[in-house]
Length: 307
Image: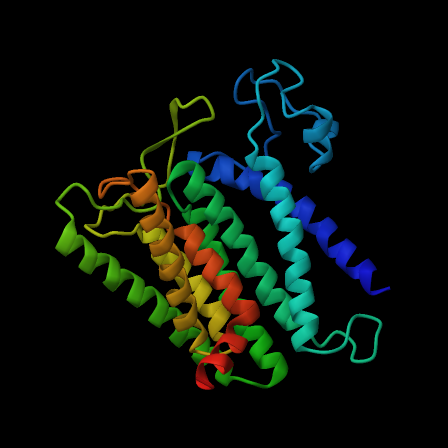
């Protein structure tokens, strides 16, 4: 029956992925999350049967039932990615803590599952918003940080391992501090005033038609850095999650994130003519580094120590 738990986890991933799509689209625009979805082109309210994860997109052949306008491929991609990542996190959690639900060992893996799913959920929303709108919404990172800190404290107390709280907070400080310092240093050396990344909530963003609309949050400070402050805030959450397991995991995550970002940027510079003023979203690389580190970080460290 092991497969059953993976199917259930992936199923929940599809459902949550559908909600994450709502967050990705509405949070940067400052819209409420509890209103019914509508087509951004014709304004037609989307019925429940047109909102079934993956199934509705395929049934409608990727087009609005009302006006026939194309539905962004982001929707099925986010839903499928969430399902796969949820299943991956479940596999990882039962791998490092033997014993599945209903099997010998009980549910000892649940703390790992909670930390992993919470981190992945915020990362999916942040990556989607960064790629689609160029910002990381405070409405995702702030609640995510609070929930992650509460999870770290609660699960550490539950297991009688209070030291995990210290390593989590230290990792968050190391990760966010390094990211801010590196971005500021880059901005001072290579950027001119006015070229810095804005904080994660611009005054206006664009809808699916490319028209500016919606008011963002009030947090609009601008910094002369090579990264947005939303990236730094997200790094706090990542640091808390990875630090729950060990402080050095955040170092591995930063290395992998910068390595991936550097390689992709170099390839784009050579083959696509990416220039210094062109912006490349960094959150996807931070997220990829975080997920790889969460699952295989200890293996990477063990391999490194054997060199």
